[in-house]
Length: 188
Image 1 (cartoon, rainbow, N blue to C red):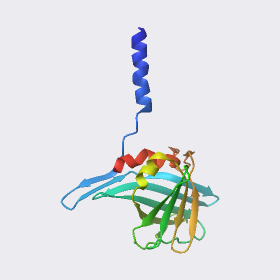
Image 2 (cartoon, rainbow, N blue to C red; image 1 turned 90 degrees about the horizontal axis):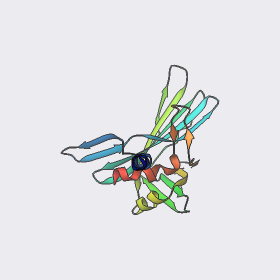
Image 3 (spheres, one colour; image 1 turned 60 degrees about the vertical axis):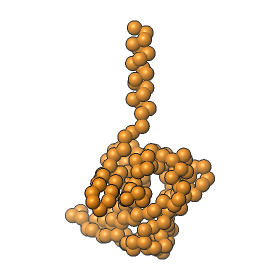
Image 4 (cartoon, rainbow, N blue to C red; image 1 turned 135 degrees about the horizontal axis):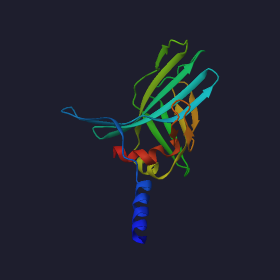
């Protein structure tokens, strides 16, 4: 009886601490090449009065080239300023260990799309693709991210990465600080 309880506890512990499997939104291999992208993951949510903004990450691997896809969604009844990306745009990730990872934009100029919904809200959706610099994977696998700095065409924005938050949008719990630690293995 004692061994059955011990064995049950052992298997329960393995299940509890097992790594979460990779979830892909796309995983394609054809005559042109290969493309694999993880599901989008919310890393920031801000709500104040009639304004809200969300940032989502997704990692992609295109013919062996790893990239970070970022989607920005803003919703407001008032004016929404366009933050544009150009060839000089960069993404900086400050890690808890003090190191800074720099990522380069893919040279695709983009200011997003503005859509008005049926409730009178303006919605700006903007996407950007950033390339990893050589040897940045190892640092991102070891240390959580404490801050993200985005250099747009005309300005810079800082976003503090939370350890954990519960989204008001879908009531799910997210762990943005450890996104890379948990997800980079999916595109290696």
